[in-house]
Length: 121
Length: 107
Image (cartoon, rainbow over all chains, first blue to last red; front, side, top):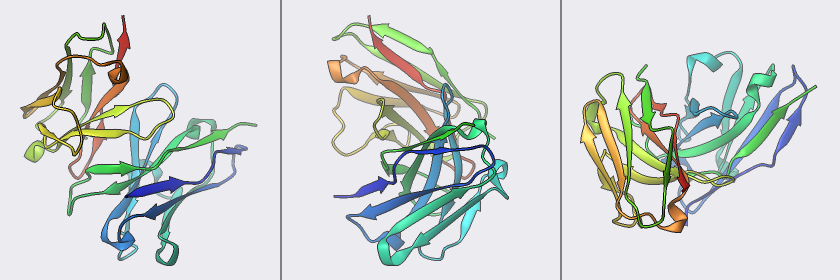
């Protein structure tokens, strides 16, 4: 069965970076893109960007451009999201999700379990 | 950016009752690329409906979606105890956005 398993919760200081991983199983990794979505406390979900797991091409939401990098390791079927220059506003649960349609279509049937990133001095 | 506004913010109902949740878009959602998710604390979101009205695999038929253009509705015909959760809508076209969610709580 399809599974996306994310790395564990993180606590970071302001100005630091965090990397969250998302290990896929149960399907051909390079056949489906991976998006990253976050939810800050008391807020709705926010799309951060996605990576084409076949080509490695990325598309980031404007808000995160210059501060986020999404990568993949096909040999381990794992996608990564690194966010730099963290502030308290980045405290959120971060999710990876599988992009289940082609082109300009971002339907997600499968999600990771979420990774809580807490930014605190 | 298409803004999705969900109402009400909280719905207080009893098991067995009907729930009607609204999602209104600031502009027309192309190709009815509108999905509904159920989200419980500490869990991954669960896809219920895509294409405005198509139930995902394994979703009970008490969940139904309707609407087009800018107005969409999720209906839960008879609430089961496991249905009390947060529900959010998602327009999944190129510039995707999410609604802020409706909490369905036990009255």
